[in-house]
Image: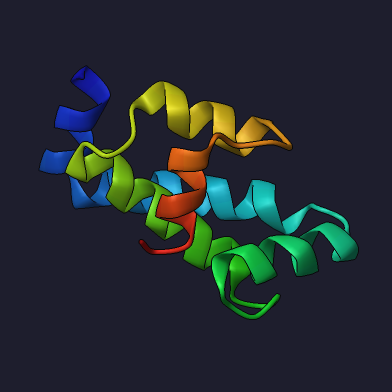
Length: 89
């Protein structure tokens, strides 16, 4: 809850978290990037930004917890509620 509040009140903190997430996501293999892009309904070159910004928006809106966010960027199998956020639904 504290992280949600911090992200809500600090656009710079949100930008930093999205940038760090993008860096992590961009290090995936090209095949993984293509597959994640398909799930997120975006192009491979835009995938890191799209999913990271959607995850951050999900966190700020309360649809995801910070724990969900952390698990998602460190896991190969996000739960269904995270998939929905990644897909923009």
